[in-house]
Image 1 (spheres, rainbow, N blue to C red):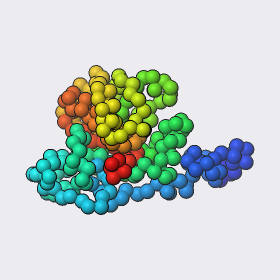
Image 2 (tube, rainbow, N blue to C red):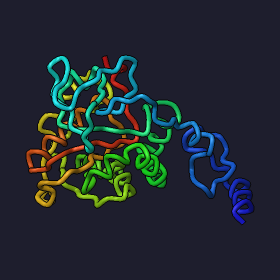
Image 3 (cartoon, helix red, strand yellow):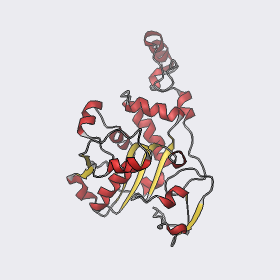
Image 4 (cartoon, rainbow, N blue to C red):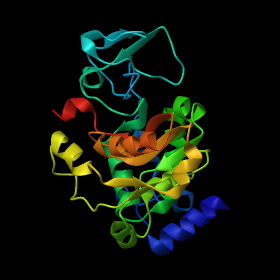
Length: 259
């Protein structure tokens, strides 16, 4: 019956893939074709235990001290040895660990564009399924997920918050603990340092943050670039009493591309 329905829909509507824009062979199974989903990369190994990036020259840290004067890396499950990339050893952050499905490129980038800019909200569930695989260790160690908020004006323009859509499918309670009260310029053309300056004081707490005191939470967003947005949110959460903040995104721009 599904094959028959696919044939009828293809004949009458000629739908195309939301990512590659080629005709869909099985339109009843979603707005992205199997080829594009299969092109989404598996997590690369080895990975930095903190940010999840692949590396070429890992740095190994003991659990009690860090080389080059870097602070000890907190992890959901403490181990004797932790490995971190150069970026995590040199750039301070309030986030204990971060994970993503893969790099913000190719098919994954096009799928995220379809979700975020074309309003293909049905893509949130299959993306979140892959996020659960990439960040299972973070979700197991957390009590709730907190989506990164949009400014109310942008939320009205877009009609939805993609971070909230992703968060709803991650299997933990979703707590809207943050509000964005500063409408910042677009981050896309800014240098890493400018992005962090752009995010200062952009976020505040909602009344729901009180219920998260003493807990561990996972921040959820679509893309991590420099980490400025996530770090700004993490600061607010920790000031509100959250014990540990992890970050899980659908994609990441690897740190080697930010220099």
